[in-house]
Image 1 (cartoon, rainbow, N blue to C red):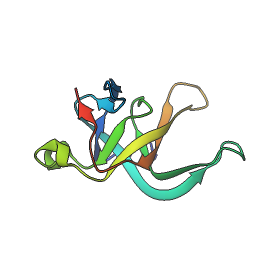
Image 2: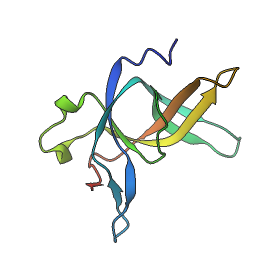
Image 3: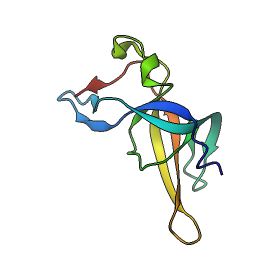
Length: 121
């Protein structure tokens, strides 16, 4: 089952508010087991609402919209961590229950973020 085959890794920085100038702040990075699929597709919930996304991940926990992801293990992060590139932002989080409502499939649609990590608090 695709939800259980989360044998890849990613580092997530959860949103933690904004600075006084309006720049995004994030919490310290956390490594998660996930399944990462690169894709350039369009999500169309309504014909008038069209959202472009660059990757989709399957995760095992709820994720906040606005979280920043990096594909890889935390041991592979550059030093200093602020030099990390290829970042993605969660634009849509979906939590879909199974027929009996006991298990959930959690997916995130990601959009390319700038190559600078927001302020870590």
